[in-house]
Amino acid sequence: MSTFNKLCIGFISVYIIRLAVSLSMGMMPQDAYYYFYSQNIALSYFDHPPMVAYFLKVFTSILGSSVVAIKLSNFLLSLGSFLSFYYLGKLFVSETRAKHSAILYGSSILLTVLSMNTTPDVPLIFFWTLSLIGLYKAIFEGKVLHWILSGLFIGMSFDSKYTALFLLACLVLFLLLSNKYRKYLFSYQFLLLLIVFAATVSPVFIWNIEHDWMSFKFQGSERTDSIMKFKIQPHYFGGNIGTQIMLLLPILFVGMMVVMYKHIAKLFKTWKLPNERVLFLICFSLPIMLFFYGISLIYWVKLNWLMPAYIAGIILTGIYIKTKYLKPTLIISMVLHVLLLSQMIFFYVPIKSDDTWFGWEESAAAIHKVQEANPKAFLFSADDYKTTAVMNYYLDEKVYAQNIIGGNALHYMVVDNDLSHLIGNDAIFIDSDKRIKNLDKKGSIPESIQAYFDTCEELEPIVIRDRYGKPQRKFHLFKCTNYKGAKQLSVK
Image: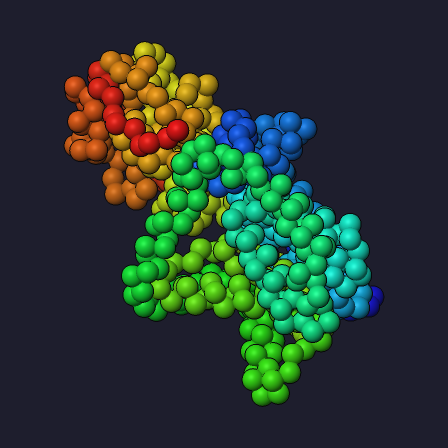
């Protein structure tokens, strides 16, 4: 059996385990929150554009609304991203090199993250890859139709996540630097792209205009304030490096950094740009990487923010990386995916966070019993969206969020902006205990809820244990009487 055939078998094995991981993972808060999006279709949403809701609505309408169906939706769209990536690679390099790039990309944890949890990055990476395909054909093959399609795909990328603005910025950078294709910068083709892009993103702008630009403000204001303080945080940078190594796996990460460094060094040494196709890949990867790695010196950069830069970056790295490095990459990937699958099954590493799949369904069943004993009381939680999102998925009873006590409840406060109908009612407050110190009651009433009710009393907590009898999840419950109402954040 040839070396390449062995690599293919290893790669297919990784993908099968990835599918098993995706389908074994229970409901995550993000899955439930964006499922809530899909059940409340709108032109856009408080904290993100609408594409994640649309794709989830389409897939769950076909596959059903079970947890497995939601997970399979993510897996299938991510598989589409991978196949599009392979097609994109073949446009730039030989088929052999494209296969190498595909193995590097397909065995990464990046695709696993996309496959097992619903986030706006799932459609973003899909449409970002299609955007690069369209731009290649528009620029290098001179096809007018693909300028139009590129505008559509870039617009759909923006409708997935605002990060897609980098696509336009990188396109302008490439056209400025390219002697051969600079003519397109002030062409009717580029104008067509912008017109189609503007039409495609118009629903997001219409929604924001109607809602006082709240989505753009939410995404920009807090982060801009933190960045403008400009306080060097070396641990943020180190943490970012660590998470990106985990995301790409060590060989690909190091290989990509070496390739980027060599291109930068060569540029400063010769003051000569690489050929047009390599320049294209650099323009759609290096500036984004430099931006986010630079920002990580002063601000915590999330795991997924750099994902789009790696599409072009991995193809560029695949040009230079040797075949001998593919086998150890696959071995590392296989080991990590087996460990991840065993964690799904046995849950041997406790997760002290609400960002977990463990125990939500059992918790919902226990809370349902409490609600049955208090049928006139409404349910609410106050941890941004997580407990509210999952309980809303599992319970027939509506569960409210922290706008009940005047807090920012993301899109829940858009859907439930007027809570006056709840005034005078009793409530059950659900408080997730992320770090279980004991199995006792909390022993005190949270100050955050006291002002909004006449009285609050603590009920018995809910404790969820693993298969070994060890407590893994705990929820404190409080029965509150006579809701007084709360001033709601301004939402049009």
